[in-house]
Length: 278
Image (tube, rainbow, N blue to C red; front, side, top):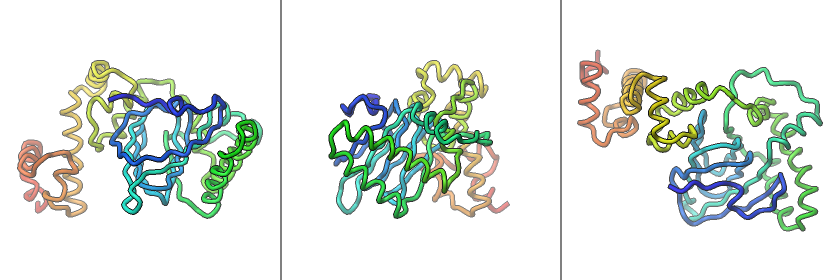
């Protein structure tokens, strides 16, 4: 699958802060995306699902996303009503974030955990903000540049006031421990039905390097390890949430119920129903 690099492939200006009104009548599933800039995706029509190294979100147009630059998988589905997908993209660089932090003399975040993507709900302020971006996009490039610097500060100050500053430091946090980042990518996606190729992309590795690193860190093949984790999760669903085997086998990653029952019995020594009633 071809990797799409954004915003490079949108033929925008070379300025650090940019707007793009993206519309599509074609659905995509787990498209490999390389974000060269941090990005707000103000979803307008359709639904969106993203997989990053340490976070996954599925949203409709009651929400919008803030995504850190890096590798992700993206699914876009058309809206049922208008049968098209639309998202207003607002790109900005790490340098823009650092200048913002310096300008407003922000204190350092105490959080030990930083995520690559955040989801926020729309409110009346955000809706007006997005509409103003569309108005700005119709102005001359030189005027856009000056106004967008101010709009960037506006949206950051507003989100920070409501949600605190952790999201801001997530954008500029560089985890230089590649091994720790690799483990985090695997652990975060252990229940997501991603292929080895997709996980390799999120880890910024070739498939062969990914398999080698996986066996070194988890002392197991990827397929066996993920099967174990999903079977353990199925046991939790059966026992704690009273789910039926027929309700969960696809969620766990099995094509049919009989294969799931057989794999479950091999691991736990009993069938899912016997486990549930024990």
